[in-house]
Image (cartoon, rainbow, N blue to C red; front, side, top):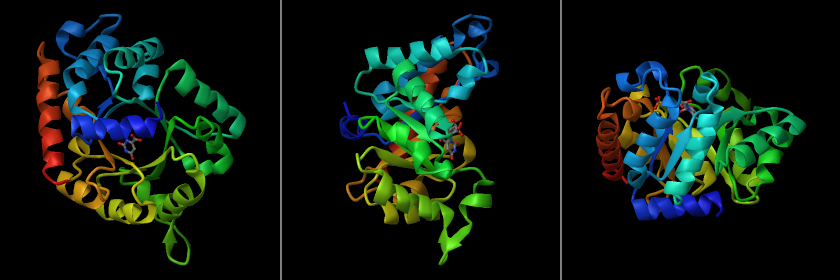
Length: 271
Ligand SMILES: O=C(O)c1cc(=O)[nH]c(=O)n1[C@@H]1O[C@H](COP(=O)(O)O)[C@@H](O)[C@H]1O
């Protein structure tokens, strides 16, 4: 199924704009998982099973798996989500960006090896570096636009002519030229609601991936009010650490569920 079709269905049937980010840090796992060879899979799959009915998508971050030599557990985790929660799309957060021939390999890795439904991509090497992902017309291509980190302003705020800032150019380029298959989305940080509103103005109802609530302190009300589309959806609002590490004991998955429920409801109050 097309990523956007699955996402829209999940927004509707789950009544949720929440994306749970899977950023597994073994030093923060509950004690009973320490030293277990498949601890990352066990931790993440427990969170997934406890929260799947509350989310519109999951977003595993590849660095947390690669750093622990655990790509096999990432493969198993995405296969687990597809098998147990087939209506929940998976975004592989990899923020790739390279020349076309290498990007082609990254696209195969994300979509064919890992079976992701969408990938985050850095657009700053230009169209030919993004095309190999766009060629998978039913997969989501989620391009960095206005990132949540403070240093995002260093480059993304540069005036590229006539008062237009670089992140605005990215938004316009993606909406007007790169989105021919309707499979593009943009990353805009929850820490910058004014820019979320600006991007929404530029891209119509294109879905936005919005990280930065929870651990990074972004304001949920301001994020939703700035970013919702005309029908009150249009957002994948990511929270990782605040949900994953809500509990630190045997009941960590139940604690994550409570945190996810609270976050989903807080988002829905402002739609
Ligand atoms: O592409 C992303 O997901 C992303 C973009 C961005 O601008 N800021 C950002 O925090 N992220 C990711 O979103 C997640 C945020 O995690 P928490 O701060 O723990 O909720 C991490 O996996 C980041 O890599």
